Length: 252
Image 1 (cartoon, one colour):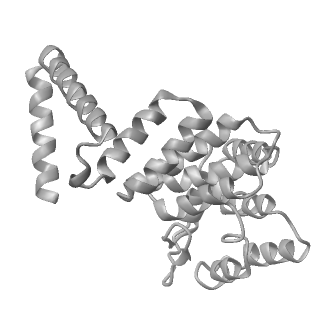
Image 2 (cartoon, rainbow, N blue to C red; image 1 turned 180 degrees about the vertical axis):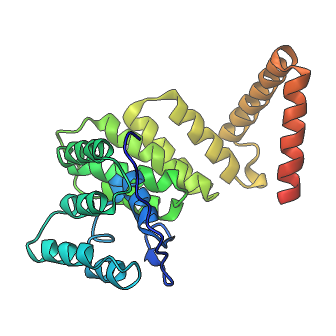
């Protein structure tokens, strides 16, 4: 950063809770950091009277609170609201705020379904899998936008499969990946579908053709991985992996 950043010493006794992602905010710096790293999630969960009162009562930033309340009375946009917070907090430089503003303008020009997918993608990246599922489902269950290529919806279904898979809901994940493959014809989606179908199948159906095909595929990939390890992994890399494994094992 090119200019001096003035940090605020005030830390809230009572945090502001962003319920959507289960994050507690204690300082203006944390609030600004959340805004800049979650632009796709900016909505009513931030632009509300409760946040303004929290800024006033907990951070003692009275002028900022009054300005934000005044903007809300004039029906400002969520983008204008968060930009005011960034500008008045002195946490980021003018150049950095300008980049944020440009990004917000780009988001405004996106289609509704594209913005919704970016929100879901952000939730998925932050491991809020259940919430991500809800947003992805809302995209595919609502009326589809004809101006968007069907491959876009294929990607949505693929991400939905990932969100389900991360929750070990393999049957639901398989159904999502199957639809993703139908729309996009991406071989990776077919592979993901086969894997989830394999994981969701009871042992009684182990003679099923999908089960046998996936079992064979996984065994072949394991063989290839072993060949790659034999050829490419040095003793130094192996020691690093061992240490990492021990660390994870202790944590578990």
